[in-house]
Image 1 (tube, one colour):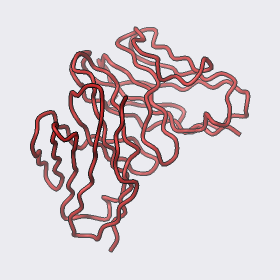
Image 2 (tube, one colour):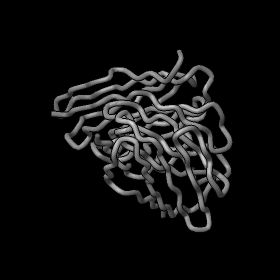
Image 3 (spheres, chains in turn purple, blue):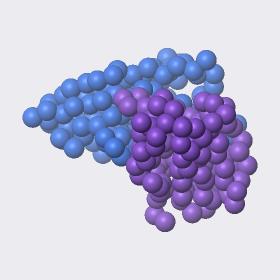
Length: 115
Length: 112
């Protein structure tokens, strides 16, 4: 596609439910990043993939958060047993290269609300 | 540690010039990015500085001083559509494509 797409755009979950958020990066982009953005804050890093390899997951806030990118393109961020503090916008970004600073292009985000 | 500071909010008048400052302290440095983010939308790339000096791109310019850990984004001839959050972000690893570290963003309101 022309840009990074994410689905769903909005998700409401009851506390304790599991959710799965999908990211379709720009075709051919090697690097993929997940960020969490709370209201009125800047994006905070969650995890990073280079192709199918998860190179950094230091930003995942707990073991309830899990991400995968099995074929090096589409990625899924899964949150198990959601809590109210998980409510945020989850942004996905992709960039073309594996080396250098790159230029991440962001998707529109998934706004997760946990009731 | 990593620390990126920018003002929380700014207000400016349509047609005027506004400067949004950003200071950073990171373990490494491989470039500074500015993104614009309208409410409910994705951040969109505005500028990238890796060397000291001013980069001009139309109504937007960005300046970097690596020795001072300082950058600013200059917006000229402000338009109402420039009302948005402006995010300063640093790439802190010169050896790879690592995640950007973002500031909290500056919410700019352009008034008539």
